[in-house]
Length: 492
Image 1 (cartoon, one colour):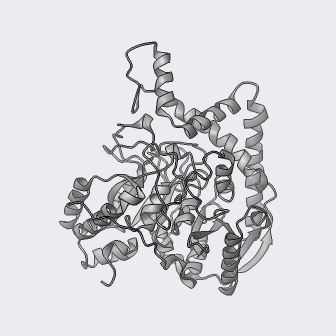
Image 2: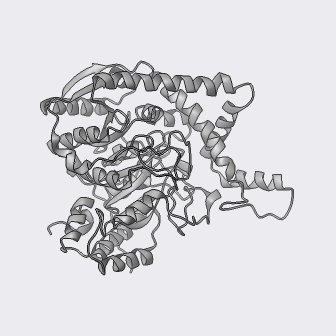
Image 3: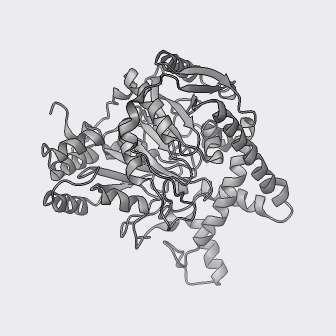
């Protein structure tokens, strides 16, 4: 094998393991060594239980290869429950919390033979677009360690880009899979709301959250989605819709596919280099046989305001359960009343961005403001969804930039929350409408930073957007470029 094991895609490794060319323990040792040599710089991982990982590999080695991900190590964002492993949502307030159960997606990975590798860093409770709000420190972009990896699934994207994970799971509430995928030069897929079970995902905004894969290429994203998708009676929002064999249907090509280009996504504020890369990508799609025409999403301009009313309201409600009594950390000072303990615990346990969103959400839900803000935002959300419904009556897919700029420098937007929130301007409306979206690499800035192309489809049409993304990927070489990550010597 000409490449090191850790450089393989998940599907290449799975094929090699099934054919007996590689043993599970070899795959595990390769990725553990890569993790040790890159994590000091990148800080993509919060924890790896190497002993448990090796034990799982040994158990698999004694079995006949079975499952779509037999022996493949997969890393997990720190808001997805893994039984008995500390799961903190990158927050101090959940320090020491060890779930007594697996999330459904973790169960499904293990049922297909995957090895759960470790927990990945993120913005605290998924509140952010840069992984700077983590209570455990920032994650760095493998392409430029002075820049953010995106967020909130920044650890997932950085680990995949740096080859310290063969694939990873993240969560996407307003772009938290697709935006870091774009900024780290990997593939990130946000499925339709209800396609993947949220059981075991620690909630941010329950009507928006969705788990999805971050991967080295579109084939890996299709493979991971096949494994984790499907109905789950433990999740009341799970949809009872058949899961197609996504990987088998990637090669259908783009001939006759109708692709819409929303005018609202190419306005002032879009970085010229991003615009140029996306416009070049659209030319490639045309050359591949797709009919690309302009369209409109007239209510798109209201998406950010609508999202930050609804998402913060749901966050305020969901995070009320973290009070130092049932979960995680509490302030143990032996004085004062129960209410004072709540106040001390939440004041010290939550970071600045979490507090900001809790207060915003509490405000818009409060008496006298509910109708003016929250109820009105629900109506605008319906209008945004209707825009997409009309667009998909005419088009099979829509194409937009994933993020308005390449990765920015640390600290650049911390003092300007609105500027940070606008980092998700092209991804937020997708969550409001509940539709699927994927980000694939489509170019690089002059300074060598990745740029992402976002492809969208109607609800439960992941097969269609994967087909478009795969055709584009195979016609270009952007996904083959790798960052030169400065390594440290692994400790033994």
